[in-house]
Length: 151
Image (cartoon, rainbow, N blue to C red; front, side, top):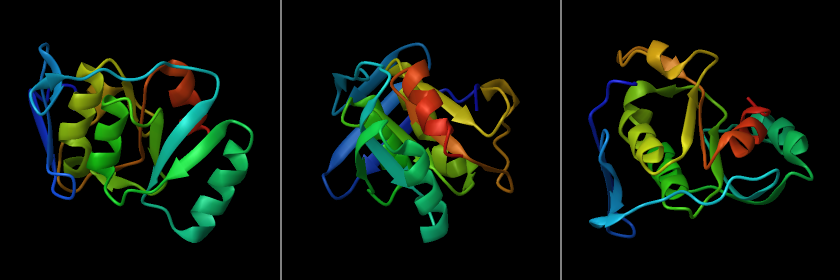
């Protein structure tokens, strides 16, 4: 994952294009992107890949630390919304395929945010098609820690 050089996510519903090149920043429709502020509370959290029983325990863990929760229905688009400062963080409660997060994790990092794959470092996350990870993205360390407390 750490070696991904180019990321592109197209949101067909909103007709928006998110992109990033490693070391060159992230863009939305050609304009620079930047994550929102990091903080001890999350105003908007994107929740993806959740079964009802997983969501119930995650919501209990987030009580008092998250103001709103949104479900977009796409890991890539939800993480891109973190990169654009629309969401403070996002979590996937069920492991996702590497291809679901490879492009968008670069977009988040190039916009100044942070990502997490399972329990290991980004450099240890392979891109194999059979690999599955829990994935989280956030504006910064504090928001990422809150989001990951549910996984």
